[in-house]
Image (cartoon, rainbow, N blue to C red; front, side, top):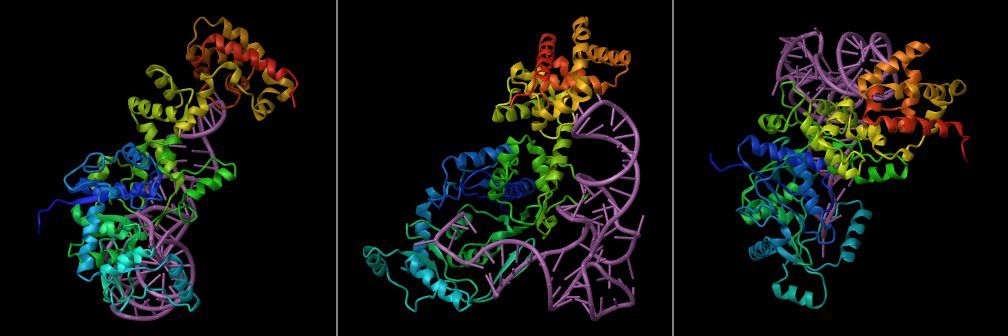
Amino acid sequence: MSLQTLRARFAPSPTGYLHIGGARTALFNWALARRLGGRFILRIEDTDVARNIEDAEAKLMEDLRWLGIEWDEGPDLGGPHGPYRQSQRLEAYRAAADRLLDSGHAYFAFDAPEELDVMRRAAAAEKRAFKYPRPSRFPSRQDADRARAEGRPVVVRCAVPSEEIVVHDEILGNVAFPPGEVEDFVIVKSNGWPTYHFAVVVDDAHMRITHVLRAQEHLMNTPKHVALQRALGVSTPAYAHLPLVMNLDGSKMSKRDKQKDIDAGRLPREIDVHDFRVSGYLPEAIVNFIALLGWSPGDGREKLSMADIAAAFSVDRIIKTSARFDRDKLLAFNTDACAAASAERLRTAFRDYARLNRSPLAGLDDAMLDRVLTVCRGFRTFRDVDAKVGMLFRPDDEVVLEPDAVKKVLARNGGHGVEQLRRILSTLRALPDWTHDRIETAIKSFCDEHGLKMADVAQPLRVAMTGRTISPAIGETLALLSRDAVLRRIERCIRLASSPPSG
RNA sequence: GGCCCCAUCGUCUAGCGGUUAGGACAUCGGAUUUUCGAUCCGACAACGCGGGUUCGACUCCCGCUGGGGUCACCA
């Protein structure tokens, strides 16, 4: 038994924001390291120059930190086994490739993409699996130089021995791949850069990675990695392939879903961590929810903080079955997390949301923001808060009366609603002081006097204040505005509702 | 299609030979209510099918069916 410390890593490629599935992978690796006193490493896999996106690395790191997932070594922090960006490790891959070439574990190949394509088509036509035909004699370095001079692409392929490869997976158990199943895959591209398979193996060995938790879609890659590890003479880390996270309908969660929603004129479904942030979710709710996708602490608890997860995590309790991403349940978790958060926590998180969304609530001071958040209690996301009180913090003339609201509360019964607005004006004007409970009481007694239900007055007032029928309790709503503003908005509403609709 | 993985309420899951199969979300009732939301009660709801093994299978084995992943000079 060695006493080496556990080292786990998360290795995204910088192609965009952090996907929610990637976030779970990162979380599990993080939790494993935290639970067992190991190190958690962030590595950027940017070997596909064409797919790299400017800023993606920074966004990835920001999303991770927003979730509360902190790494011990990474491109920005450095560490003893860096650099942690693959584009800066080309020399290491070149050296490793040379070793493989020299030992006969790898060989040069010169096929043009079109030629490979023809071979694959032919195989498909004959209904057999395509496997790259290994040459009986491996080309020499001189051959490679000559090919390059002739303008042919030169890649390096791994000569995979024809033997059974058994992958020991901590979740799935032993998975056996029959001899001949793994083809001679490319490890160095014609541009000299390593492929993913090669870079991963070289880096995991170099960075002393002991545990690899990754999505199950990588399972078929693992025998390649094991073959490479054997050829390189390095040890194989413990692998655990995580069950996939799917859409509610069982399809793969992809960015296409977002576009489909946009095309259909719906609010886009959140796919990336950043989407949830913009939609007004709390990171602790997201982390709690995704932790439970394929894993559970085993004692019936469902509400878990990062610390709880780190304390309870174990690979043994990861299940094999893929999970579906149930947005309703996440919403419920978020609602609870909002209710449980301290005023200070809520303020901080809300400001982040408000800034990203350019909400009219972005500029509120602590006291006013606390008040708003309290008055809106029960909200499910910050978007709810914005929708409920945002209009109160915009100029009067931006209040647009929604047709439905006009029809249902203002115009009904021959303008019954508008009539109440007219009558309540003097009551409000006469109030000795402008506090939510005084306002509330005054409106209640106004209703009693006139034999009205609370809704008969409160609803028209809501429409006058916000243009819609949704707002906090009516006393709170009015008290959030100055008395002058309330009177102005009532008068403006009466005017608008009385004039014939244009268009 | 080849290879590989998987299978408990609609969804996330607990269960690890003997349980009234538990919890959560959703749903449906009811309560509360000044809108939305929240909240409080209650109800409905699952072991895919067929063979074995066993005194006894949700649990172990095999087959079927179904779902998923993967077959790039992408990761």
